[in-house]
Image 1 (spheres, rainbow, N blue to C red):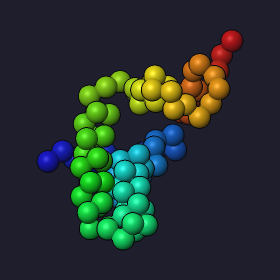
Image 2 (spheres, rainbow, N blue to C red):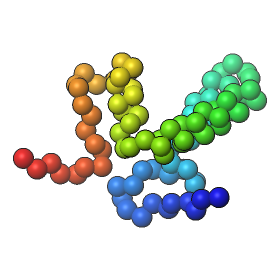
Image 3 (tube, rainbow, N blue to C red):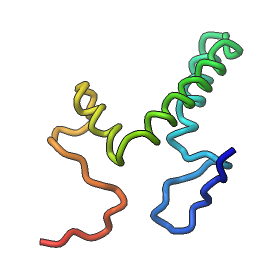
Length: 93
């Protein structure tokens, strides 16, 4: 089992217990839909599997890969062609 990386700086991603927020999101989304449909016991394992697949995809690709994939599919929430890195605090001319 790999050791858990504990955030040490303010710029590190948000963590919920031992997982980063983006790893827990598929579980919560599946739980939400499971509660709405009254079948939470079916949707929680689906959320766990989706979180595991997301973790493997994220670890095997460079930073910003998911932003690029969302843009490529056409699901961007912004009308621009690029995304600003949220961890960059200052831009130089």
